[in-house]
Image (cartoon, rainbow, N blue to C red; front, top):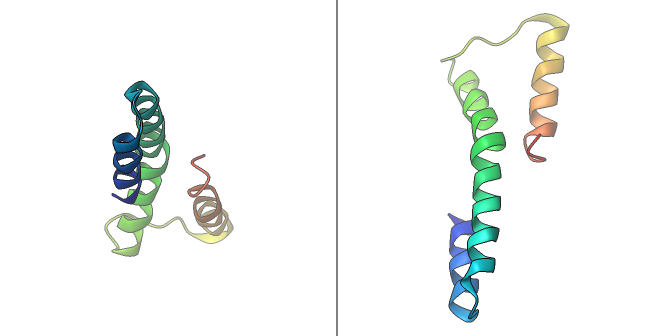
Length: 73
């Protein structure tokens, strides 16, 4: 929501809205494809709606999710 509000505020100042549309599409598209699914899995695991992997592999998978989600990887 904050990103969308920021893009809207920028769009109010610019005359060429193609730049804003490209920025918004790239940013929100990347979030939707890469970050949102990982956040949904983490949320489901916290609410015990999805099984958590066990053992060292589970710990490593959780650590990778926590560190790589903000990067969008």
